[in-house]
Length: 344
Image (cartoon, rainbow, N blue to C red; front, side, top):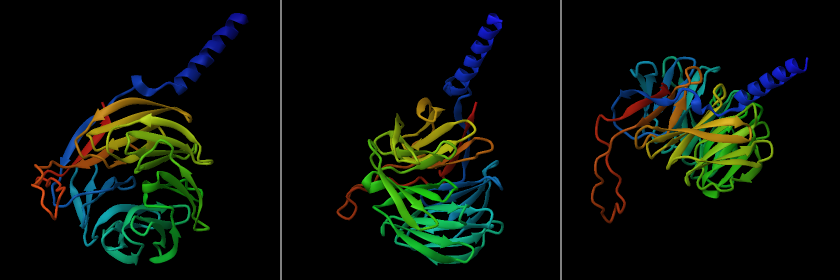
């Protein structure tokens, strides 16, 4: 009997260790495909539509729509001046773009990609989020430092929520709370979407200029990627700092895959940091995937677990002038591409 008990205890311990072991011995990620799609204009956020297998890519003045399996361009959503992001309201059958230069959003039909409405926002709407629990869309406006709450079904503004500083990326817990990084204050704010007010604002200790934000809804953990090459992990219930994890340079997006328990940071230095959630309070970097310089925004396919990133090749920067003391290098025409990252 004692011997059987020992075996059972040993087996139980083995299962526990396996459940919480880092995924370092599992399949590794790598760039598995390149879709060279070309086209003019820069880029910002991209969104993955799990229902249709399409990728929505913002390109400065329009949105490109791609088939994620083939890289084929399926269509364009034009006249979205300074577009930063696309929110997908699949249950309403519409998508919504945040148009930074136009200070508005474009509402379009998800099937036809045709424009169905337009709503004014605060100044320079950047990140955009659809909250399925409330059926509201929120734009996070960098210049006016507020959030515009929109009812996309009625194409009307519901509220404007003042924020503590310049907002960046945002996530929803699907239970009435929206979380947003405050980039210029190194903070994170929690919004009550029903009351349309800020409930709390917490410091992101050790984080400089937080940009991308992701969430583990089951364990109430928030992942902010920061310009000083760290990702902070916060308890979404209390704002308590749980962990600080090293990442690559120039990050701009974060993603969490609840099935694999992996957190991703896409970095402009040409790397993708892969972090394993060993437990809700412990995180281990398990891989740094070489991608391409400038590939700092991404979208996650929750079904295939693939990551999609975008970038292009650039020539030499032009000579500095009085009007342009820090000129940016020009994008080489025809080099814009989508990188697909999957497991080996």
